[in-house]
Image 1 (tube, one colour):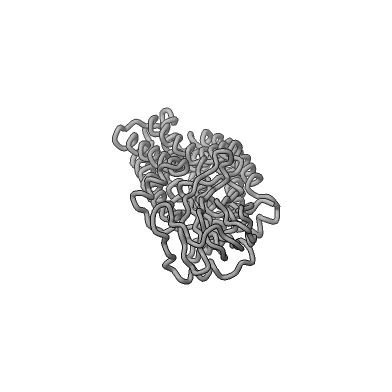
Image 2 (cartoon, rainbow, N blue to C red; image 1 turned 90 degrees about the vertical axis):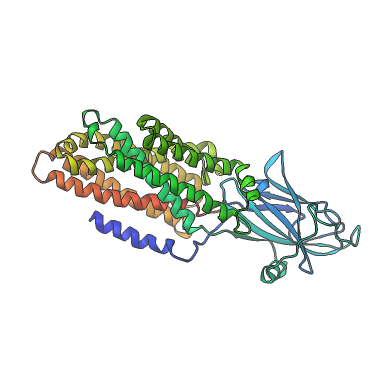
Length: 437
């Protein structure tokens, strides 16, 4: 039954990882602007001021001003020291006419958002266009993009970058491998007399794979947020100079340190410390960084650590069932007790995150984020059922012939479902949460 359910989860989830990008709603929303969309001004504005629903990263955001001929120049932008949700662009002197403001921002959760709106200048201080601060005014090379930006002035538009499949998969599998290796290492280190069975080689591989995939994710993420899909040296410097970029770099560094600690220094406790710190930092990446972070970041941290214990416990039992059946029986009670605490923590923290990120119950059906949450909940329900069956039906009867093999099969099925749930979590980090009312 569990295996069939896992296959069903795969079939349901597979359309989300196909070639088509995941549809998006909004990460950050443009709340208001000065000048306002479609406004008619008697004098040209000195600045373009944009106010968003979430904090923005000014160093990785841009505003372009496009005239009616399609000529565009990038404005010098800055943040507002009094409001982290504000982006300001200096305009300079411009002639009268219609203008399109094209903006692209990086929100505090690391997601790029783009949009545009028009305004009109009825009279002007001067009839010449001031050159951009950094040099000659660049002209849009993509005529289709220019026509789109200048098409109509019916109101502001938003384009939310779709969830990148490669980055989502790298994030989910990287974190999953790291959590598996860290949890397996924890149970091996704390196994007492059964510590001799700890699969050190498997732990090294899992943590190493996790670190490499998270490093790959960082570069895939940088490509995703780059306006030109190119990562030059100056762009990388800008990314690493931002808080969101430094957080990503710290996560990768801690994962690599965990790998070096277990693979080279053979310091298991140190590897647990570095790996645990990596999971804690991961709690500050993505949506929690922008949506009530004082609640969502601690919840995400506890969620990841609990999932690592759960997955690591399952892998530990699966390993022991192959190498020492007596040790598996002895460890089953300890693992099941830890798993019970972990699953309670997972449900509590997951429920809190859902309450913070989902505004209306209907968003669970209408929004991509909500549907992925439902899939994750389905997987967790299956896992709770399997865990309860193991704890209360199989563990008390481990001395009976054939029970250990049944427990081993059940654990392997749980591992499959946990892996799918973690992959879904990788996509949840990129799929936009439903917009606030």
